[in-house]
Image (cartoon, rainbow, N blue to C red; front, top):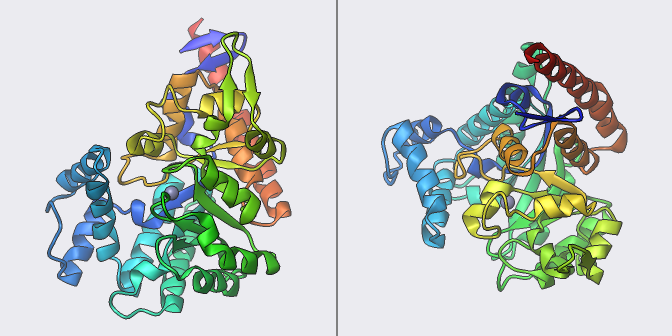
Length: 378
Ligand SMILES: [Zn+2]
């Protein structure tokens, strides 16, 4: 821990864990508890799990995700989706997701999933949406009964490789006053440009609804450009490849291309997921992750988990990695958190309440704890 004019980094683990966090990009089917997968597989008579105890199964997931093989990575989702084909299973994973995030210090989260992937045993799209919403609501109630607060909004995802996006967009609008706060498209990016789903995005804009688009992760600038300028995305899922539109000169000066400048100047939020980006090769390492540079240039950067199970991560871990790699102190982590909260899809006045009543006072308290700890040591 180094102290530099009041700036203390890296921030100790226990303080990062306690810090209030806002999470915008997390997949429900990427965050199951390993033991839950085993239980659900047993209930459903699902035969294909690659391991039968929680510890080996957890290891199998992270190994497959770090293998560099897209096939193995996709297989991980085949299992998590395979065991969540009933309303009870969906309710359980949503409920546990809320509890796990609250235990990680998350006070606000937007969790996304693709309803169209959970119809294999005959559930209707409405039954799927309602089971997940009920699971989150139960989690929120339990967290609140234990004296903490978490709010969860749902994003409905359409698979970009399929053609159900308009139907899923309509579903998102139908449930928008019941806990669904937005829409997203996900899945293989190369060969499946966002404009393929223009009809869905135009519909959402006519409905004054919010959406984000996975873009600039597996494919570069054209995907980001389409997501923003053709589809009108409010936010970018990942967006890491926006660095392709930056020129770093030998003297350290950085020049922004027109698209990069537009995204920075319009304050378009980037939902960055450091560990996941390293796994998929969108970034070489945490230390070389574009988040550091984009933050310095004033982009609206946010930190996210993407798939907690596959990446073996949490918000606490992502923040610790950044604190270590970039020397971020509590003020930096707070800045990233407020950025995320400002970029949330819930109403502006409700975002402000979370910023002013939870994030700012809790960070002020943590800064005081850390300062005391440092003085105590001197
Ligand atoms: Zn994602």
